[in-house]
Image (tube, rainbow, N blue to C red; front, side):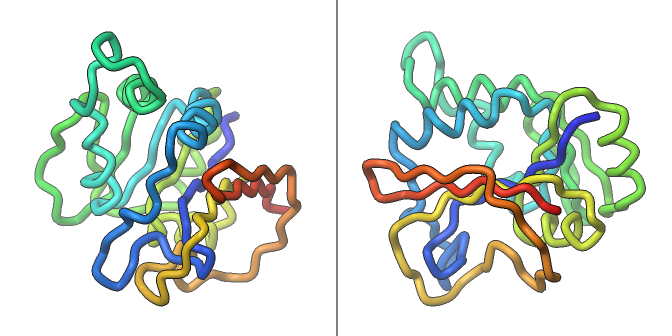
Length: 185
């Protein structure tokens, strides 16, 4: 059975985007991106809300690995190789391979999917993740805390319920970003 993992790049004050919707302050840099690649390699399926999918679909045609070997190009290859499920009542079509649309998030369906897969699953987008967390489906969290305070915006855990966490590891990077890996008890 695969694990369901919520990963997010967040500001010190807990936002994934600022009040204007920008997340340009969250660029991970080469060292962090290479580390993220290692974490993402076991992911077989990405679960996204519409907004997160529209952000991540960039990787479908972003970079050519052969022409531009880099952590970004490697990530594009990892992303393209995985299945994607987009939860949206409004999205009519997807523009990436290996992608399907589900009209609503159903915790029982996600639990069944999780139990049938050997590879891990990643859930992206704070609203979708909050539903999975509330349903007790998320096994681990990977937070990349950027050294910035943005003041307001979209929180990485909107409407969060209480979670008891076990710190598995922490790592600092040269750019000041900190990775925190938690298991959910």
